[in-house]
Length: 264
Image (cartoon, rainbow, N blue to C red):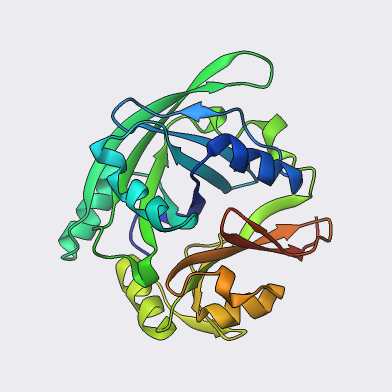
């Protein structure tokens, strides 16, 4: 892997109506953080669902800003898995490492957001983010990396206990008519490898972290018994989530969710 990149950090689910999406995911047994608002120049807001080392983020536009142009363009077409974030221990060093390899990475961008806590208090979550070029989106999935400066304000213990038993992300699933090419593209960008598992070209992201898998949407749909027409032909299609409580597959805001039972 690229130096300073530790593995998958979180998956971003783009939604048109933040509060309606939050209610939909809560109905599936997720415990969501209080709604957050990003910096003014970002013009976005979010809800998160925290696990052990990773999490899910529902992301929506609150005000049109140049920064959220790509998000608005995505939402004009559909909702669903829009991008994946890696954890980086040093965003600035990560940018330098990618640039030295001929990849036009940008950043780091520093920002924060206030965090309402379950006990009624407030904290501030602060991040530094680096981006791979927007043109380098394997299978139309954008990737970036996030350095957490205040992990305690994001991984709040009271919010990590999920009523539906989900404890981690096992895989992010990307639909592609050319899965070999897309997987090899991601592996090149992150200096990873590609292996075949259950018809999916899987790219590891780091020890103990979720992999990112590429396959035709029909293959992904078959994993959970979904109608392939519900999934995009190209782009983020779904997630495999590890849970201690058996649960049937479900669709939520354009994202296929497959729950895989794991040992606590």
